[in-house]
View 1 (cartoon, one colour):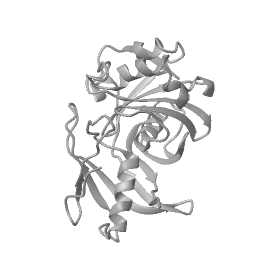
View 2 (tube, one colour; view 1 turned 180 degrees about the horizontal axis):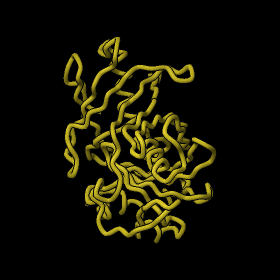
View 3 (cartoon, rainbow, N blue to C red; view 1 turned 135 degrees about the horizontal axis):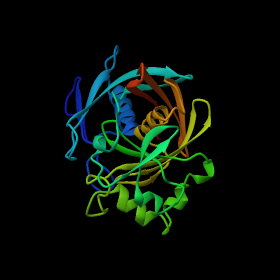
View 4 (cartoon, rainbow, N blue to C red; view 1 turned 45 degrees about the vertical axis):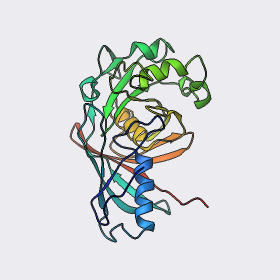
Length: 261
């Protein structure tokens, strides 16, 4: 991350992926940034502040703004990040050449590049929460790829083609690339997920990915609005979904960060 460029809110920043590309949003990154602001005495004492991420990715507004507010959850001091209203479907992430699928009577999409890697990866939900996501839903936790498996030659090249924009990837189905997730329901309000990030690869924990997973699960009736937990190899993310009638209005992510000695 690069920033802040101001000494008072709102704060502008850049988020740079390992491959050198700019990200529109990162839940973990914004949490770390908010903690750094707090330690520097820049975080307002009341009401939090607005963080604005500038990027050059096509198909999305810049900057992407996130409201951040200090909070305590389960005796852990951290921040609630208001990620705004999610958008669903291929148009939300500028996906091309995808098929139709169905899950729990809800329309989803079929991504041929995913099902060619594993025949069980048939049903995916595209979600934009400031950045693009493709959440593949499976009913058996055994069908979730491990981070080690995603790094093997049988999966890594194909996942990179899907997730990364050119020249590293193929930019299909999304020309600007897309974050990939796999999710399953393990208990009421509790989801398990795996993540292959655009610009990064296999990832132990991702805040926006966890939020996209929660939104996709709500869309197919796996979870209700309210508190949702998403467990990944790197930890469990508390998510809060706010809905009005049959429409998801906003998604909120709780995160905490600590300075490493």
